Structure formats: structure tokens, C-alpha cells
Length: 64
Image (cartoon, rainbow, N blue to C red; front, side, top):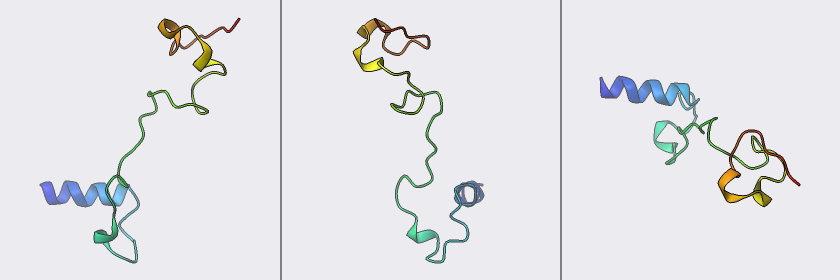
């Protein structure tokens, strides 16, 4: 079961048809970024870094 799960992970990460083989997969290449985690310039509003620390990651941010 673990081998099947590992092969499925490699396939979903696009590593199944790598000409260098599965051994060429580096650490972290099968990881998927969390869409809910805050990423600057991607899903945080402008001015988030100048906001009050208590409200820095609030979805509706207003800057003054």
C-alpha cells in the first residue's frame, strides 16, 4: 500500500514521465502549497505589512 501511495504521489506531482527517473525527484518537489496560507503578492491585500499586528492577516483589511 505504501509503494502504491508513493507512486500515486509521484504521478500526481508530474514526476511519472521524468526522463531521469523517479530518483531525480528532489526533496519538496511533490509538495503542494496550501492555498489558505498567506502568501505575499498572491493572496494578501496591499498594505498588509503596515497593518496593526492584531489585524495583519484579517481578510478585509483597510489601510489608513
